[in-house]
Length: 136
Image 1 (cartoon, rainbow, N blue to C red):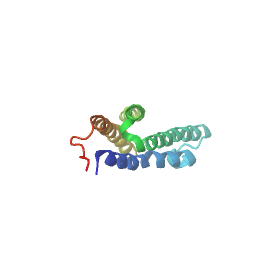
Image 2 (image 1 turned 120 degrees about the horizontal axis):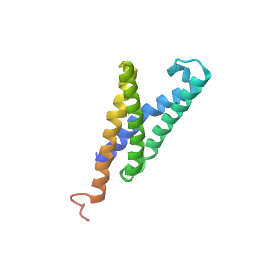
Image 3 (image 1 turned 45 degrees about the horizontal axis):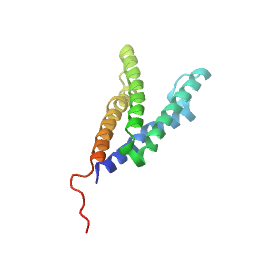
Image 4 (image 1 turned 60 degrees about the horizontal axis):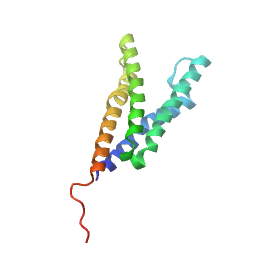
């Protein structure tokens, strides 16, 4: 299986996290946000909608992932920026439970790793195959 195809599968699977969590938080914010004030819930729903949008945006790049370096880099930067904000607050609060550490792994490890992988696939697609198929 080609690196391109493996990357497409990995992005599809990784995208399940923001799409699922984003949709759940957007439509049922009281599940994730323990505040019951309307302002806090609507803000949580808005932020979850952004997360859903990021996941859908990554999914939209899958068919031509090898040509999407700019978009993958931009989306990754958004995710990492959010992860850094989460990390700083977690450090300030001393909050290191699974509900903090698991998203941090996605935001600061998995997403940047997928971005680096995409860059490698993009570079290799520009240079073409090492041994072109001979015409029969």
